[in-house]
Length: 86
Ligand SMILES: C[S@@+](CC[C@H](N)C(=O)[O-])C[C@H]1O[C@@H](n2cnc3c(N)ncnc32)[C@H](O)[C@@H]1O
Image (cartoon, rainbow, N blue to C red; front, side, top):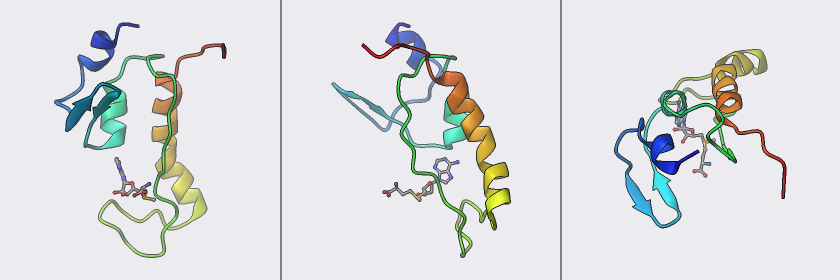
């Protein structure tokens, strides 16, 4: 998929280098702006079930955390391209 098509729906990046672009925003919102099967690799460090309230909420227990994270997982699954390793 052409790079221009992948990035055309995204807002202005924070910065761009020869290796890619960095975006600041709600990951769920940004993921929804990407075409399906347009991404080769996703690396994430999501919030884990927290003891203390954070500005982005407090998924209190494991089951609540899973409920909170599932929409992200669903979008990650949608944007990941199915390709064989070469
Ligand atoms: C466990 S920390 C990750 C820390 C990061 N890996 C680092 O080394 O600094 C989780 C981060 O996810 C961010 N976060 C929470 N909800 C988010 C969302 N919907 N979109 C983007 N980031 C989010 C939080 O602000 C927090 O910085």
